[in-house]
Image 1 (cartoon, one colour):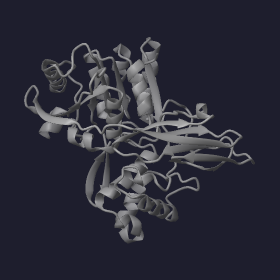
Image 2 (cartoon, helix red, strand yellow; image 1 turned 180 degrees about the vertical axis):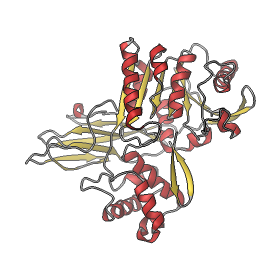
Image 3 (cartoon, helix red, strand yellow; image 1 turned 45 degrees about the vertical axis):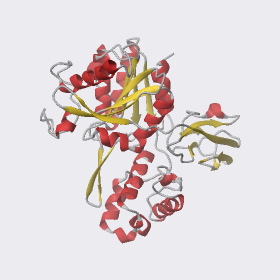
Image 4 (tube, helix red, strand yellow; image 1 turned 45 degrees about the horizontal axis):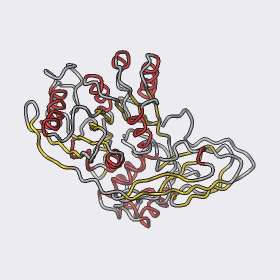
Length: 409
């Protein structure tokens, strides 16, 4: 399920993260202060030992990927190959350097493929020599088109293809028809009934993958995987179990106790620390951890990650490329001057605070007001990501790649 953003009277859908029990903005105060230097990235500054320090890569283009953080102290990092990572500050100065690598931009093919009852929109890419393919699943209210046009999903697609995974993106039957077929009040994937004959969503996925087999684009000897966000995360657990996939991944969804008690498929949970979605929240995060532990206790590989609350930095809003660094810095300074950031630059509360204040008095925010609608939405999305709310995120892409490749090996 995605968060609805009431900005300028528009209803915009956004979608959802670290293996840890620590992180965020806490600190253990000391009298000493040490320096963090960051090359090709952000997060440099003075910190006390015990502080949680976040570092971020510079923005990169469609023809680039983040590579790694290099340092003699790289072992301190929660994820040295993630574009955004964090560490606990020791009692010494540190220096990190981020590197990028060039890739061939990924252009997804698109066509309408006949499903069980109707044509389905399908986006796909199978790199030469692909090791298998990943079925990518949107959240409630989502569509295939929204998925492939969303920045955070695009980063996952880039990472997958660069690692020789094929990708297939389609959409729930309710998304194609625009009708709530089961009357649950949502447009989304349906897990029940649990079979590929009477359940049209399962049937469509089987038919679409069979189409690629029949064309010789891929083969049945290739491993299959699934990854989904929110309702798509729950559906990923069902799909991977029903069709005996190699592994599955869920973002911002606990994915169901019944599946955890019977599935034999390795499964990874990527949650968001301050997920404010009504169907997730702290209870959903706790349930995801319980389900991961249930799988592990049954001898099934499972990983559990949580995206942590991270500070904003002046260049953050330029990450997607639709806002310049100068504009981003001005937005940051405006948020800071209007009292929306702590002294450590953590956003206070959720993005609703700024949308509500902006709608009440747009002229009070001259910088934000100067942006176009899509740029304003970028600002809101980046705030949602920084506060670790219900949103698809790319902070654990490399952890996801590792899980798909090796599971718990």
